[in-house]
Length: 295
Ligand code: GDP
Image (cartoon, rainbow, N blue to C red; front, side, top):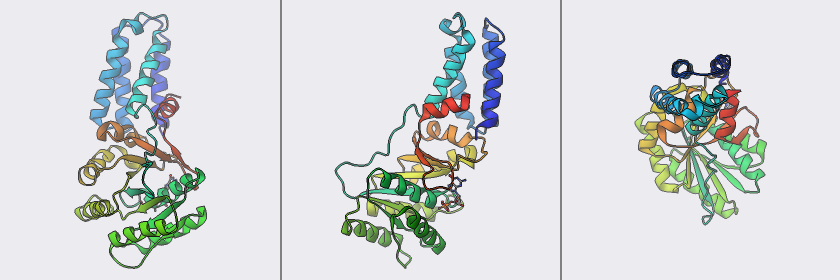
């Protein structure tokens, strides 16, 4: 992930370091290359435009151009702007302290990694001393409930599933199951579709109204690229969501989706998942990721 972008950026910085003093033309040239590198990483073009314009303005300031180490300061500006692009700080899960059980609802396209993320999130919360309850609300694919049951078994978290075709009834019963068993967080796994469609949105909306989630997290496959902007905008408009779980960060995606989603939707990336193991979900830290990208 991000490898090609990292290589490109490092090349730009190496070139600047070789120059000693920098002129405005040098900065312009570097910014052009950074712009191309971001576009090639499939970052949304508006996000790229804003990024380059902010970074460029800061690099033209005399503190950068006239400093003793201008190239180093350019790197610092790009690092800052990249951190800002990714959301500045980790926003935390944001559960409500006064509600038991809290309800977290996961939404996203089919195959995005929702079911896996549900189990991983349950595992993470369990390791923090919580008593989670998973609820399988994908009524179209029995295999999804089977998968959640298997994953729940692996991480030692109870999974509620029920026959029937009404996800709202299952979600309500799942919350009741959590109450009856003194569990304090309910994670509702919902059905996805291969593409955004009205039925999926209407169902997610219905579930939202029924269980009033404290957090709605959208699971996004990191391979998605800048199309994430359209998918996320559709979810934001119809169900709204509070944050993003970026899955499959261990893949060889160019990283455009991860770099675009915050700026394009205003919603923070809260967690990243980088593998199939239950413990491969971690809180997302923009500064660490930005540093990783710059190498
Ligand atoms: P859902 O349809 O949204 O519920 O997606 P699933 O949870 O079934 O995930 C789809 C596929 O992606 C499965 O084969 C998962 O094992 C895989 N997957 C999910 N998250 C990750 C991840 O972070 N890394 C990798 N390598 N694979 C993942």
